[in-house]
Amino acid sequence: MDTTHPEFGAIAKVVASVERAQQSEDVEAFVGLFREDAIWTTGGGRRLLGRAEIEAFTKQVLPGGMAGLRCTLEVAHVLFIRPDVAAVKVRQIYTSTTGDPSESEGEGTPLFVMSKEDGRWRLAACQNTGVA
Image 1 (tube, rainbow, N blue to C red):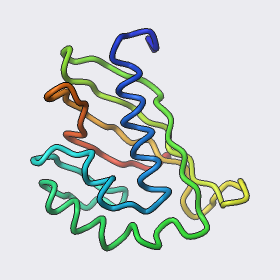
Image 2: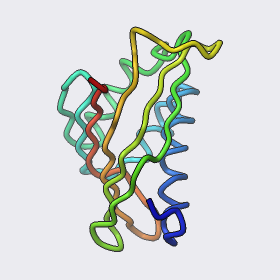
Image 3: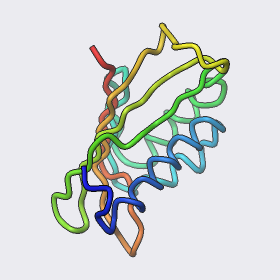
Image 4: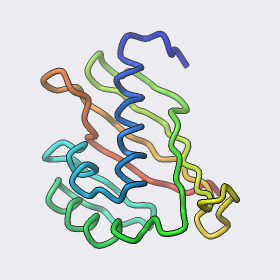
């Protein structure tokens, strides 16, 4: 993975923002990272189309959803499809608040497709998948 790519840092900041929004259960901050027409498939396989659906779902599951958990996200790989479009593989690790691995949540391997618009990277299409 080329961490020296000029856009790598900006993309890593978006991933860090997703982590912060989840940890703080900040629905507004989380939803604000998506394009208006974004698509997202949740870890449970639910397909969400557009920011409004993503927001409605997130309002149901995020508040209280991180109780007793800590979720860390790290960029595992970035594929620049075009200078303004990137596919980003993320390593998602759930632990208890004391750092013990969470057996119920396990580890995830989300794929974030991001697009750069008006100088800002946004989530365009995301698939959240558990590690088998």
